[in-house]
Image 1 (cartoon, rainbow, N blue to C red):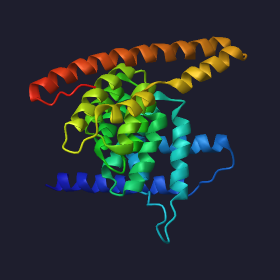
Image 2 (cartoon, rainbow, N blue to C red):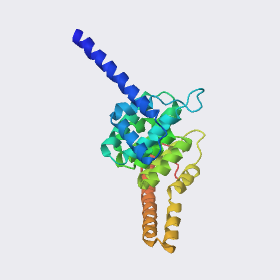
Image 3 (cartoon, rainbow, N blue to C red):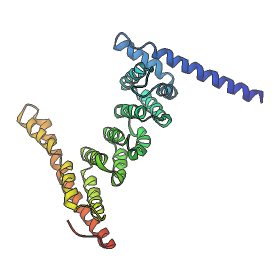
Image 4 (spheres, rainbow, N blue to C red):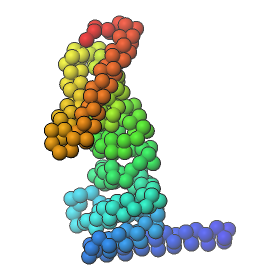
Length: 276
């Protein structure tokens, strides 16, 4: 029993000392130059994910009276820049941020942390970001972070969340899937969703919801940018962008055909098929 009490006491003392160390380092911000900033970030990262989580706990919502967490937010910016030099530091930073997101209760604080994952998150951030796609206040930010990650796992989570998404979030998810090269998946999923909307009592016809979505998927801006680069100096990059746009259009067309077939089968099975 005495041994257990001693271990608990040691753990508490270690935690308090660690928290004091993080606080002391944050008070040194701002630093004089980039080298000093990197050195400070390296000291913070010596504490690993627990130190990052402790730092996240020091955040307060913007606009909170008599509380200013500017130095804490600057510390996160320094950590994000520092993490680009070391994969182990990046992984620890992501783990700490994810734990901070799960512990935080304020949406603004969660949003700040999610936005940091846009830069440092890889597949290790996907399990934390995926559930946030259903959150009314955090969904758009989680979608942007998953788009920046751009892995197969990130694409899959956006695609799975798309049928339940509404309004601006659904539009953002469709654009994210298109920009991630998942035009086929987006087109195949969107058409059944449009038919589901049509099947509702006051639902508009499929073309009303599908056509705007289709033009969001078509990467016209990418194609125009490619043409501009072909005419200009960067012809190689312009040709690559143009070919990517062309392949995306083909993928969208094939996806629409697949989605149409799926919708037809489902609609006939439920007596809601009215055609496009």
